[in-house]
Image (cartoon, rainbow, N blue to C red; front, side, top):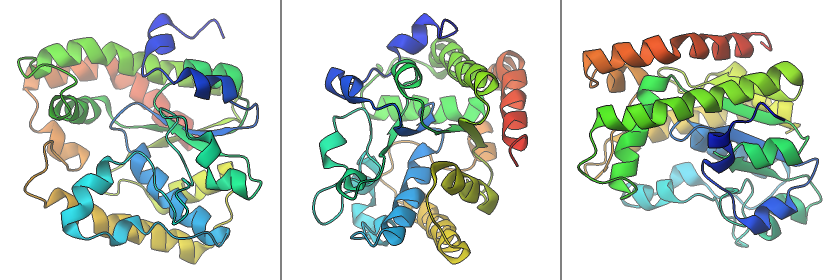
Length: 275
């Protein structure tokens, strides 16, 4: 995998214990930060719980005053403390509910290099347009204290747009090499996901899901996001892509489009090739 560049070998690193335990058949939900993989994780978790008669985590039914804490949790735990679709940036293998019932686990991650070189299982890769992805990532990173408050959005994008480009380009190259392995999905407005995308993800991962279950999952997300966005204490902006883009300086937005627009178009074409 010589096409994996140095930044993707060091970006969002995984715990050594997790890396050593990656199985050849493990399945992964991958995305650049702030690109919608959490919402796909929540929907897939509910579908897996229903398909396997697992205890329900009921993420969408949490009271409004618990949404902030719940949204920040990287894992969705069932009543036995097991995660159905764990975040690979912890060391969640032993707690996976899918392992308990003999299923190959599905992990969510923002890291690429160790995963795509150690595992051969199916990958669902989500791409959000670069401008809103970076803008959301900027506010999230500031809110979490990952970058200094003095860092402006222009400087943040100068640093992180090359990482976004490298992330997407790496997965496009893997898609070209093994087209049946990687399913590209794009984060959409105002969804952020449509029915055909969730159906494609379940089919790619081999998750049994009835049309009624898929519809319930989409309706749950559609009802949840407005409640989350309405919370006055949100530390970083929520909203569909167009709303976020309108807050970016025009010159910065033009630069992002000129640098990454063609790559995003290629990612959309990769999604359409599997439609």
